[in-house]
Amino acid sequence: MDTKNFKMLNDLGDANEKSVMLVRVLRKWINHVLDKPLIVISLDFILQDEEGNKVHASIPKQLINSFDNKIKESSWVNFSKTTDVKLCDDFVGEINAFNITPIDTLLSGTIAADTCIDVIGIIQDNGKFRDIIKKIGIPAKLLEIDLYGSNGNKISVTLWNSYATQILSYIEQNPQEAPMVVILHFAVYKPFYGEPCISNANGVTKLILNQEIPEIVDFKNSLVQMLASEPSSSALLSPPTIRNPFLTEFVNDTEFSHIGEVENIRTTKKVVCGTIMPTSNYSRWYYIGCKVCATTLKTENKVSHENDIDGETSLNQFKGTYKCGSQKCNDAIVDAVARYQVPFDVQDSTGSLSLTLWEGQAFPMFKITAMDLFKRLVESGANTEEIPKEIHNIEGQIFAFKINIQQYNLLNEGSSYNIFRLTKDPNIINELQKKHELNLNLIICVQNSQEPTLDSSNEDSITYPDINLSDKDSVIIEDDDVTPLERKTSKASAVNKQNKNKNAETGKRKVQDVYDVDSVPQQSTSKQKRSSKVQDSGKNHLLTPKKEK
Image (tube, rainbow, N blue to C red; front, side, top):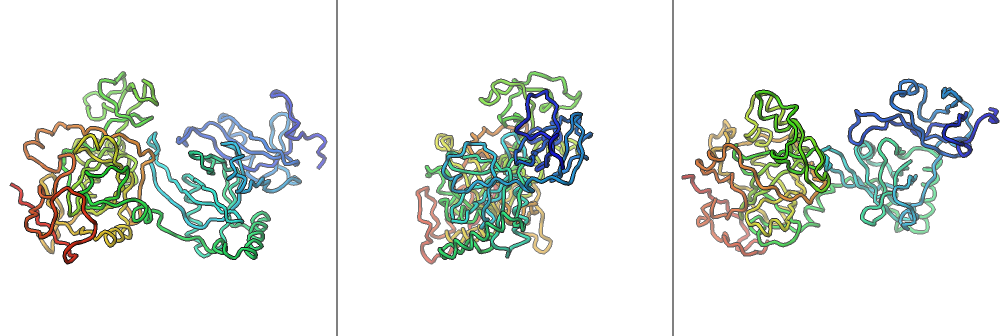
């Protein structure tokens, strides 16, 4: 093609100058408001001319329909003076236009933060995958992996949402493929607390996994040559290891504690394991939170009632607008949403402990946000001040919890502890049980707060419905610095006091308050820290629950 009439990207002049260009579309994506994919801003592209120059191009949302079908990714496009678009087939530039940055260069710290890069490397395992809730209340998927260079050096990579699931799906579908080489095209170099790290740019980054393209073939050849001189690095040629990323964290990396020992602990995080106990129907399960920063909003800070519903009270607390006094919002006018704040007790053979389940962990467990659950209860005519069945369904199940022990807990005896991470993975539970000789076969003392399901084969046994959480699910809250909120007293607090429901109390309880410990030999009732080794014959005895009076 005669290129005399085409301008190269480096020759573009003033903003108002009209030019004719011949370019290849390397990437095409919809640009939308962060975490709001339905609010479109523009249709964006990365374009490359025949000299290899690149530019970011954008079409405003009102013109998207005019150009969307004409411009395809990986196509060659001719832009004319009248912004007309024509496809052509004789572009002579590079096909992929990679500009690979070596991992060693990224590790050197000489690259500026937020620089757009291309990087190639080997994936050795499936990394740490988790469902989280961002601070603004949006659920997200997060994958943390290590990317190895041909010399064995590695750099941390953080992938979000569809990029995370794309990697995991490929590993699951190709478990024996080795080595697994990936190119991150248009990734972003984003150091995390001073440590080198790579992340995807939403919609822009492209993952290329083990394709037969020159860059990946050349990388594999260089890897073979390196291993010929350094056989010790042969593990790089092995298939990726499918591992449980939370097993090491719960069993080996974090110190374990029996629940009865927690009040003597001064470390920041501990792992405990126990059974979730029945919860009073009248415990408050949500709070009114800022939609932006999740801070508690008080009724007296409501500044607008314009959207209130006549004759309806429960939803009105989320209508209108509030003034949020948090440091982030700085008295801004914000919308309010319901957020999970679920209090419950967890118990092992040494005692019980009060924990609080926040939005970050509750959403992946219940598969519904607190706001949507609240609306569902209103639509069905249910009492929104009672614990929903979705929350009651976790009672009687055994979980391992990584709890956050904060200054607040140390200064306020009987306060509730925040959950940093939790899992019901049977492999993790079994490992903790074997390592610390746990007795998890507790007899649950059921209160009158709910009606459990009776097993028809044995009227004395009690079963609880299972929650929709797979055995290997683990969940995490992104911000683990949440200050425990004081539990709110519901309208039914008077009923609680009359019934003297112990499960509605906050804080830790001594085991002798719940069980007849005198009937169990060698069962310590003191609060002194004890060894995790089993004394006497090593047998754990079941505890006999006290009778309700």
